[in-house]
Length: 86
Image 1 (cartoon, rainbow, N blue to C red):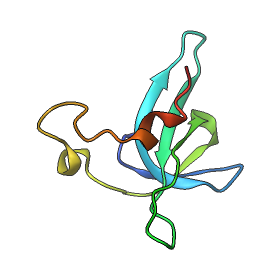
Image 2 (tube, rainbow, N blue to C red):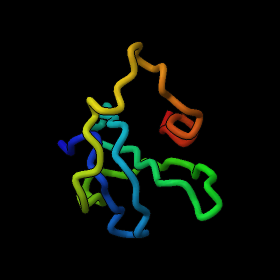
Image 3 (cartoon, rainbow, N blue to C red):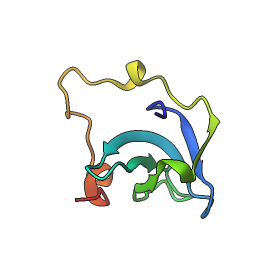
Image 4 (cartoon, one colour):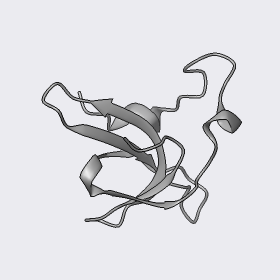
C-alpha cells in the first residue's frame, strides 16, 4: 500500500500530484487519487485516480498531520471528489 501524502507520478501519462486518497475495490484493485499543484495562473487542477501499479513515488510530499483539519472532511475540495471512481 502506498502512503498518503507522498508526491507521485503516473508511469503512463506522467501526471504528478500528492496522494490524497486510497480506494480498495471489491475485485481487488487499489486506486489512488493524485492531486496536482496549481497551474501557471494559480488555478487548481482536477485530481485523477490511478491503479496502484501505475504509480511511482517521486518525493516525500507532505506530512498528512501537517494538513489535517480539526473535523474530518472539513478540508475536502470539489477537486478531491470530482473524478473519484463510483
